[in-house]
Image 1 (cartoon, helix red, strand yellow):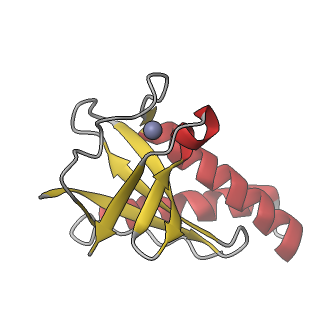
Image 2 (cartoon, rainbow, N blue to C red):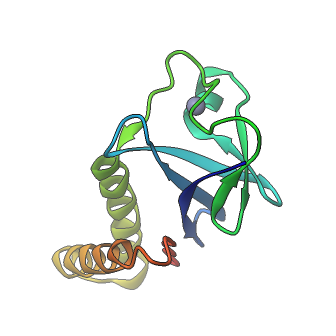
Length: 131
Ligand SMILES: [Zn+2]
């Protein structure tokens, strides 16, 4: 079985790869999964809550027998996409200001433009934030 697409977000600074899955059941919301090994990703929120929920991703699509939104911890709910994006922007912007001596306002507007651009190219459905 194949399910929806995921966006890949890579952060050099944090040495982590996170995929964002857009919820079908709650439009405008997303789940975040982080890379565990190879094509296996684990739900970030479930991990915090002490539940092991993983998905398999191939060619930027979730594959497997179980729907990616089934079987999460009862308290694991998808987050509004805007919030997730804003968090990423904020984190990376702070890094830019600190590491590259950019003015906060410049770093902020640059980052917003980059993120908006990448999310708009939905044919690829891939977001690569390489910082
Ligand atoms: Zn979960």
